[in-house]
Image (cartoon, rainbow, N blue to C red; front, side):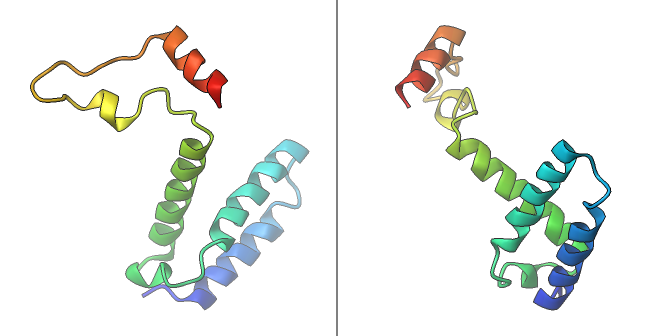
Length: 102
């Protein structure tokens, strides 16, 4: 089981590892570390491997952020077939009109 202490050690190593990075890369690194720091620790206990825990939680965080920023052009309701009908694929102008409303 991955503990909070283990994750804190990983986060600290990653923070130190960002120092030699270029400015843009360091900003991205801070964002990644920030995603991990948002978790209170209860999520880590369901994993046995720290790499698995960090990978899963970062992917979840990235998808949540992507969804919040409405960068997914097609949501699940448009992708999945609906009652035997073909899935709806949004055209570029429809995507743009939806993003303009936000």
